[in-house]
Structure formats: structure tokens, C-alpha cells
Image (cartoon, rainbow, N blue to C red; front, top):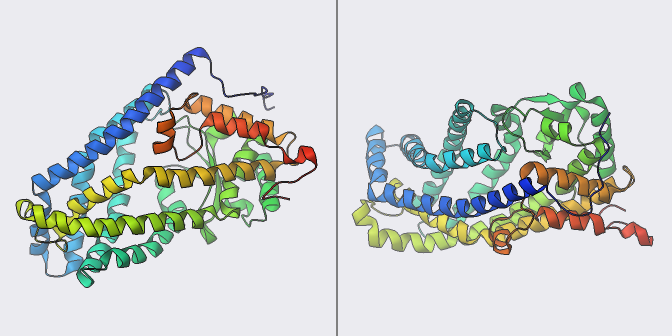
Length: 404
């Protein structure tokens, strides 16, 4: 029998967890800034040490074909950058273990890191091939052609991720084998949302081997679209709470957030690619000789291009995160509306779900405004609970904005 949930009126934590949450928020804020500057320093060192030219020379000796050169150069430079960034990766995992967010052993973590590197190198090599083909084809418009060619690759990655990538890191089992009652409740939600996700594409995911965090999500598109519920979520939440969380994720599909957000981000990255094009030429012209970079079309220019994009994407953080927060807020609203009538007092159920999420994840009870502005891609837990408790268009005889 599911435990009787406590009524929630605001996001609260016991004193000890409150202090831990505030401390974690401070570490996370400064940690993200440190990671950014460390990434910049690493790329500057790669340029200073002339690793790009060294790998380029090896690639050119391997063959005259640009395809062969890309297969030699790309894994070398991407693996080097990843290895040099290991200290920050280890630091992030150490913090998560210290605060109880991760229970993954270092051996398992190292194996996951290796698998993630392997996947990143494959995807990165494809993008590097496209980038330099565009640069060599059109030195003045490569930024546009690279952007255009990247879109179908991104769509393909989104399609393949739940089929190929995700199973490399976690175990997936049809939810009907683990929890038939929850599966039936989620089927009702899917039908009310007007989506087509059959029971065989509703999955249980074993997260508890590695972490304590809670989640349920919808991923993929077309034939790869599926609902995934973490076992940690099933252990901590009641069925109505899981229905709300899944309803939130369903909202991203029904409200077309995925194509909308991809379109917004594509526009942002089009601007960033253009700025990168404008500044990359000047950077290579001024510093290229010292770095032994022949030009922007030289494989060895990649660290300089990555340096520019690292800085530009960090500067664009407030805009991209504001877009994400807007869509996440809409998904919260959709979750409230689609679960209204399926569960009694959907607002209270949603607030309870966010309280549990915040407690388990040690979400900051008093987030710094600048932190939210620059780094939060979701609304803060206190704001989400306040909205859940106050959004009630049905009280005055009205109906939801998205679900009538």
C-alpha cells in the first residue's frame, strides 16, 4: 500500500537538509563558473602546446583523403580535450557522492565515462567532418551550411538515443512487467493526452544502482517515442504523483516543445555560428602563426573554434535557459491540467511531487536570482510548488488552457 502523502503548503526542508541544500547550491553555482573557465584554459593550453598541428600532421600522413584525415584527427583531439577535462568531471562526481545524490562506485563511474567518451567521439567526428567540409566548400558562408547540415544529424541523434545510447548506461524493462497498475494509470494519461504510446513502449529504468535522483520522462520521436519511469521514482512517489510527473513530460510532446525548443536553439546557434565565423578568421589571422594553424580550414583550427563557441554559448546561457524555463513552466501547467480529474486535487498532488523531488535532489529553498537567471533551465522548486498550489481555473467554472 502506498504511504499517505503529507499535505504541502510550501517547499520546506528539515534544518539539516536545508543547510545541505544551501551549501550544495553554493558549490554548484561556483562549480559551473569554475568548469567554464577551466574549459577555456584547457583549450588555450591545447593551442599553446600545438596539439592540433601535431594531430593534423599525423592525419595528413595517414592519407590524402579528408575522410581518412577526419577519422584520425577527430578522435585524437576530442579524446585529448576530454582527458584534460577529467579533473572537473571527477570533481562533479565527488560532490554528488558527498551529498548523497550519487551512489555510483568509481569503477562504474569510470566505465560510464569511457562509454560516454566513445559516443561523444563518434558524434563529434561526424560534426567535425561536416564543419570542415562546409568551411572548405564555402569560406564565407560555412557558418550557414554547417548549421543547416547539423539539423538532420541532431534529429537523428534524438531518434537513436533511446534505442542505442541510453541502454549503454542503464537497464530498461517494460513497466508492465514491474508494475502493471502504474502502467494502466499511465495508459489512461496517454489516452487523455491524445498521444500514441503503446504499453510496450512504457519502460522501467534501473537508476537506483547509480543515483538517488527521481525522474520520469518521454523521449525519442516517431517509432522511438517512449515513456520511461525511474525505479527511484516508483520507490518514493505514489501513483498519482508519478502520473503528474509523466503528465508534465507528456506536455513537452503535446505542446510541441521539442520542435519549438529545437527551432529556438537552432536560431540561437545560427547567430553563434555567424559570430564564430566573424571572429574565428580574425583570431586565426592574428594568432595562427604562433599556434601553427594555417587557416580556418585547417584541422588544427578546431581548438580555436571550440574556444569561441565555448565562450559564446556561456554568454548565451541566460537566453537559452529562459526559453527552457518557459517551456518547463508550460509543461507543469499541462501536467496539472491533464491529471485534473484523473487524480483528486491535482494541484496538491503536483506540489507533493515537487516537494519529494526537491527533498531528494536537495533543491535550493532560496535560490539566488542571478543563479536562476544564468544557470537554471527549470523553474525553481519553490516557484513550481507555489504555482501548483495556486493554479485552479476550475474553481471558477473555467477550464485549462491546454486541456479542456
